[in-house]
Image 1 (tube, rainbow, N blue to C red):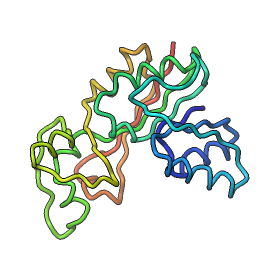
Image 2 (tube, rainbow, N blue to C red):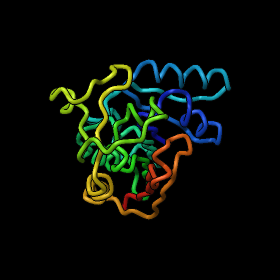
Image 3 (spheres, helix red, strand yellow):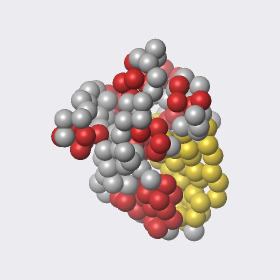
Length: 196
């Protein structure tokens, strides 16, 4: 299986623990180092590859049975390449598991939501949320440790997968109890698609 931008010693080693042959592709050397550290500590075998999800993936066609992409696609401005490359590297009948933020979450001031629990969350930003453009306009300051985030419409998330050739076979909504916006609705979405 291929884990996309899921570095940090979390999901990849767990999949390996359950018997998957795991390759983790991440842009961050630090995240990949954390994966290797956890794998070595637990006696697991994983492969790590440093690469950018916005570029062609460094893998052969039909190389994987499963691609897992957690909420990391919020760091990609345009998802088109992601869905096309996922389709290319999956074998026929292969599965794509994707998690993403519900777009409405980005309408609120993140500093208030996360760092000022005594204040009421405020609707601040129109959708689509584009941190790079907001920073350029002087409306937002981005901490380089976290990077730019981008909201995506369901058309970009689900429709993009369908246009790449996938068929969606399952859908899931969840709430992060540590995220105070979850009292208003599901803040996370996930779907499972298949390459026909």
